[in-house]
Image 1 (cartoon, rainbow, N blue to C red):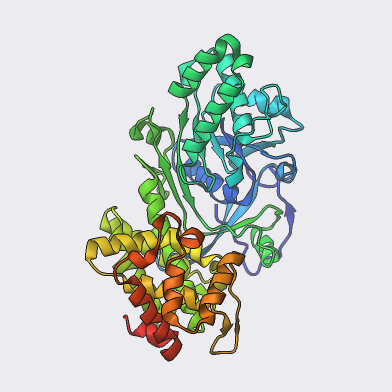
Image 2: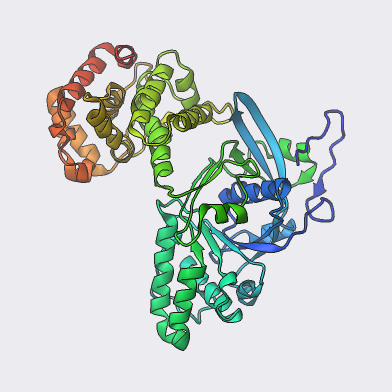
Length: 504
C-alpha cells in the first residue's frame, strides 16, 4: 500500500495502530526470531507482498531473541510500521513507502515464556525465520532444556521443536521449515548442527523420546541455508519528520532500505524445490526470491560481483580524488574501470549462466548509483587486505587459469590498496589514513620505508601468515610481482587516474 498525502492537504498526525489504520488478519504460520531493522525491511516486507499477491495468507509472531529488545515498541503500534524504499530500479528513481501489517504480535520469551512455548502447540505453524546476528547461531553447553528460556537461539529453537514433537505425538505433518537469515555462509547447516548438539546434550532429559525426537527432526523438519541481500540503513533520523507528514501517522518504527532485494533459499535435502516453492510462493509473487539446489554459487556471485568490485573500486577512486561510490561509478575514467573489473574480469570466473550474471552485475551498478546514499569509499576500505584476500584473490587466480594472463584491473586494485597503506597526503591535500590490524600497518610502514617498490611488492605478496593464509606466498603466481611493481611505479610517477587510463 503506497501512501502519500497531497501537497495541499493539512497534515494531521495520527497514532499508528489497528484502530487508526487497517490491519490484515491471517493465521499465525511463521515464528520470527528477531525484531530488528533488517528482518522488518526484508522478510516481513516480502511476506506482506506474498500475502497481497498470492494465497499465502500468513501472519508472523515475532520473538525477541535477547532479553533487551523492541517488542514493546512494536506492540505499542499493534505491530504496524512503514518501510521506506529508496534507490534505482530499472533506471528509475524510487522513493516509496509501504505499510507492513503481517506481524500479528511480538513476544519476549524472557518475560512471556509460556506464551512463547505455546507457539509450538499451534497446529498451523509452519515456518521459523531468524536473524540473531552472526553470533546468534552458536552452541552454548550451559543451556538446559528446563531453562525459561535457553539463552542461545538454537537452544530456544530446540526447546520449541521438542514441545511441538510432544504435543503432536511425532506427527510427520507438523515439522517446521526453518530459514535462518544470519549473515553466515551455509547458515542453515550451522544451525542444524547446533540443534543436533542440543539433542545430544539433553539426551537424558528426553529419555525414551530421544531417538524418536531426533528422527522426527531429521525427517520432518526442513532446515534451509539462505543468502540475503538488501542494504538496510534503519530508522531514517534525518527524514523522519518528512516521512511522517507523508504517511500521516506518528510511526516510531519506520525502517529505511534500498529498493534492491535478493533472497536465495537452498532447498533442504529432505524436500524438493517444487514442494518448497508451493509452500513458500515468493517467486510466484514476482519477488527476487530464488529457491535453488544450492546457495553456494549465489554466495560466490555476490562476493565476487558486489563485494569484489567494491574492494578495488574504493582505493582506486579515493586515490583519484573521488570520495563517494556513486560518483566513482559515474566518473568517465573510474566508472569504466569498475565495469572492466566487473564484466571483463570477475564475471569471467563464475559458473552461472552469463545472462544471469550480467543482470546481477547491472543490479549491482544500479545499487552503487543510489542517489539517496552518500556511501563513502573510505568506509569500505577498513581492513582492505583481508577483504581482497576473500573477495578478489580467488577471481584473480581463476582468471589466470582460464585466460592464461593476469587480470590487470584486479592487479591494479591490489597496487592501489598497497599505495593507500603508504599513507601521506592526497593530491587535493586530504590526509590518507589507512586502518587495519596493527601488524599489517607495521609491515607496510617498514616496506615503504625502504623506498623500493620491488621490495614493497615482494614483501606484501610474501605475507602469507599475516594476509594471504591458505593462498600462500603470492610471489609464486607467474608475473604478479612484476605487474604489481610496475603499477606501484606508475601510480607514484603518473598518478592514479593516468594509471587507470593506461589499462582501459
